[in-house]
Amino acid sequence: MEHYNMNLTLKVWKQKNTNEKGRFETYHVKDISSEMSFLEMFDVLNEQLIAEGKEPVAFDHDCREGICGMCSMVINGRAHGKWEQTTTCQLHMRAFKDGETIVVEPWRASAFPVIKDLVVDRQSFDRIIQAGGYVSVNTGNAVDANAIPIEKHMADEAFASAACIGCGACVAACPNASAMLFLSAKVSHLAMLPQGSPERKERVMNMVNQMDKEGFGSCTNIGACEAECPKGISIENIARLNREYLGAMFDGGSKNSI
Amino acid sequence: MSWKNAFSSSVGKKIQMSLTGLFLILFLLVHCYVNAMIFYNDGGEKFTEAAHFMGTNIVIRITEIGLFAFLILHIVQGLSLWMQNRKRRNTRYAVNAGNATSKWYSRSMGILGTLILLFLVLHISAFWAPNRASQTMGNGELDLYGMMRDAFQNIAVVIIYIFGCISLAWHLVHGFFSAFQTLGLAMNKYKGIIKSVGVAFSIIIPLIFALMPLAFYMHWIQ
Image (cartoon, rainbow over all chains, first blue to last red; front, top):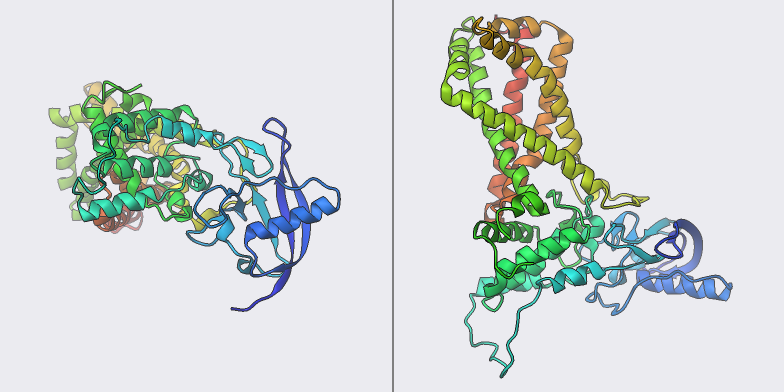
């Protein structure tokens, strides 16, 4: 692979806090290695800004190995950049050319208010999980993991759905700012396993209700979420969620629903 | 929590869109079948016979009320979802992914639907409304075949109709698949067949409809 250095122009969203209006700030970075990750390029930018006595750009990051889902950046209109099934930390600078201008924005959704610059508040996802994205566990001895037989293909599909890291790229990519891909992955992976099955009806009802309360848009099956998901979650999960929801609805739902 | 969720929740509203949409797809099939009778080129004999049945049969007339109810529900719910969803992102993106992540017609269902609605207002006031009005006044059914033949001599009318059919086709390409996806039927196993049938339907039905005004205008049928 060819190694090269590049000079870039960055147009980065700067916003002081949730209430104040944001704007784009233009920065120039020099001698960026094609082997840097996108976040390392931002580290270089921030060090440069600190050295100049300016305020660095606030951005979310944690594991930097593509599994935590923190690095929320919309890069040139694409959630996590243009590479498929990649988080921002795994996007490398070889995706860009020398002299390029890169526009970096935060996740934009009313349910994800900007805290500062590129950092958004994703607690709405936590509240959706709290509404039903769990299996109630009774106290007692730990149950043997293999005590309940599970069909191989169900286990595989549940695992594929469970790959969701809750990053919010689906919401950022959706023209309706809908959280249906996230929600459907959570509902799916629990509904497909015997441990999650007893609570499936109240789970889907409660989680959809919570999603609506948080102010996410509704799903119109556009499919942009699937295209941008760093973990390749399929919109088949949304079909499954709809099926779960219909089932719960016509069954009178659950008495435990909110 | 129960069936009431069909009216209150976002998923419930989408199920309404899906079921009314599927009913409208069935209607298109029947409407297309009946109107395609003009292609017998028999001076409208077979068409008039079919139109008489559709206009007087009690079962069809009752279904017609349901059709209008579903159509209105589809329009009202669709427009309200469209407007609500737009508000879910207060600050828009400076750069949009556009066609890189989704199809333009999937993102434009609201606009395509509005175009179809505008077309429908013209279409219903040209044929259905005067015919039913005449029936209600006790003057009997109108000569719908003759009305078509006259209306489609005007190139502007023909262009509006063809434009309406194109809007319908793009609306259907997304809508057909979307209806099954919303009902949870579009698992990977059936996704391919649903999409293929949907695209075939979206081409064939609007094409037959578009050929009707064109055939009259070009005097392929008399």
